[in-house]
Each structure stands twice: as C-alpha cells, then as structure tokens.
Length: 145
Image (cartoon, rainbow, N blue to C red; front, side, top):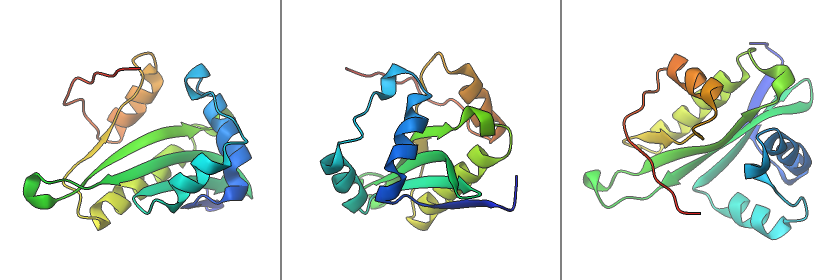
C-alpha cells in the first residue's frame, strides 16, 4: 500500500469516477451519471457511508457501507458492505484492503454486531480477496430482481 492513498467520504464531484469504477464490474452496474436525485438521497442518508480511495488525486476505488437498524440482537445494528470495486490497474496495492478496513471501522464504531457482504457468484477473484481478509462464507443468499 502506498502512503499517497487516502480513504475518505465521497463527494458529488467523485460521481464520474465512481460510475466509471462501477462500469468495470459489468452491466450489473449500469448507471446514469445524471442520476443526481439518487446520489443526493444516498449521500444525505447518514446510515450510508459511500467511501472512495484516492491515490495521487485520482479516485481508484470505492465501496458503500450501510448501517442498518435492527430490533433483534439487543437492538444492535448490523452493516452491509456493497459496491466494492478497485480500478483494475490499481489492484494488488492494498487499496481494497484499506477500503474494507475503513468499512469495518465504521461498523464497529456504530456497534454493529455483524458485517455482511454479497458478491456475484462469478466474481471468484473477489471471493478470494474477501477470504484473504478473514471473511468467511456463513450464509446462502437469495435475491429477486
């Protein structure tokens, strides 16, 4: 990892870079860069932490950590990590690790009892990355689209 790397909250000015990163993950992340309303809603929701990794002034990674209120587990919230992507040219430099560490810090600061993420079945490189960070597969996920 480089000391020129900064993990910080995203700003509206980061949107083009974030959408470009999403584009690296295939059509599952088709987005409109004109979707200002969705950005404002997500950005203003204090439970959503949209993070970027910036290296030498360039946004090279992003993820979102959502803190979810919960009635179970003594009222402790839980966290979901989503939209994790590091630019292909910058992988293997500790950027994803730094983003995931910040998501973990945010979840722990919010007293979350667990942190979950889901990853497309075909993203086997991502699965190996998560395993290297100590994540383990504990559930089977289902979705409706």
